[in-house]
Length: 167
Image (cartoon, rainbow, N blue to C red; front, side, top):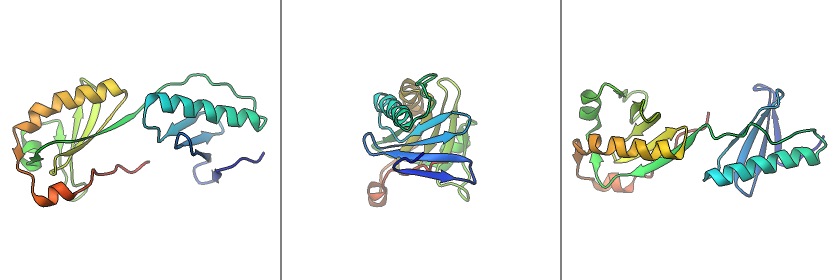
């Protein structure tokens, strides 16, 4: 069958399909599993997933929209202050900082379940299974990083929020 905005990746054994509205990408495996990434809200993710299923139906595939769930949410925060990340990572056992590998501190939170990347500029990225967990993780981390705050430099204000590359 032929589809638009589709690419077959032999090395991964999957088909990648893109939508313009909402701007999303779907990875489709021969098992029938589809992962949809790039949506900016849970509603948009659901709409995109339904559209991918509809495109496959129109191409003649027998598919249904079932077992839909949100597995991962990415949030970003810019704090009004910079952070002394070396001291922060030494003070918290859930924090790991490897400056040779990554410029930020990785903080793993168990309740709520979330992983935070904390940068010296005051920017943070939060990955969690739900929007609620992202919110709770920010509320959890704020008082902890507040202790290690420092004034933002001109360079901190210029730096954009770091992007986490897709896997």
